Image (tube, rainbow, N blue to C red; front, side, top):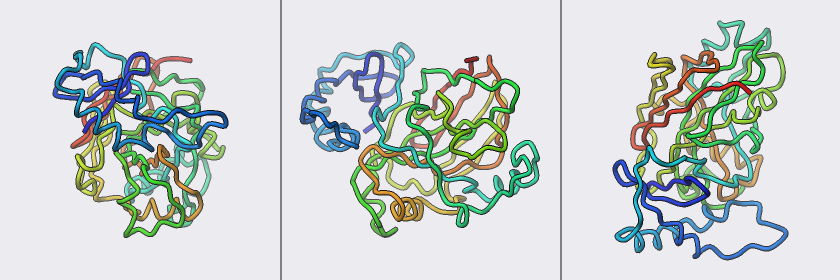
Length: 285
């Protein structure tokens, strides 16, 4: 199932070029009281929500996708985990381009590890990336994003698939400079998820997905998830060896070669096989 959040925090199912409004399926989620949970309640109860959604779909109100505002498919991720230089060709370009490495050593992912992006940087496909530091290069990075559905720590890679609820497209936007990655990649609006999430059962095999990114119609990045250095199960194992993963946590799996600058007025189009296509505007803060 393809699920989206749209307009005023409504829940929809994607069917062709239409959004079916099944917001009342959220009624199956138990009410929360203070202190609020550390996970995303929708993702924690995704199976129940999907079951109710299937019952509602035949009579659900419909809108064209281009008539709605698409929000991040995950409303309340506890954390956004990201994998740096997880494609070999991107590692090579980062080491070769001084505008990317800024005289800092670019270390392999197995040695440098993962990093966190602030959840306050999260937006959806219909919200613009808003460039703040105009005196620096601001780059696009397209990635497959994994949505965790089952809590766990110390997860073994052979069990990792059982902890994945869904997948979506991620844009890990970044300001180039000498500071730590987590700072430069946590600018407001610099973590994009969308246009919707595809549940793991519908996705099936995510290890061989073609994807690409264009800016103003020019192809910048084009690759396949089979080229990941640390693959999906290995990333889940690695992340959970440091953090307890909770439902709604997101893992950005890394970007391939071809990263490049964007500026206000540009249009980014990110496409992923089996997921879909999202168009994101670039504006000025």
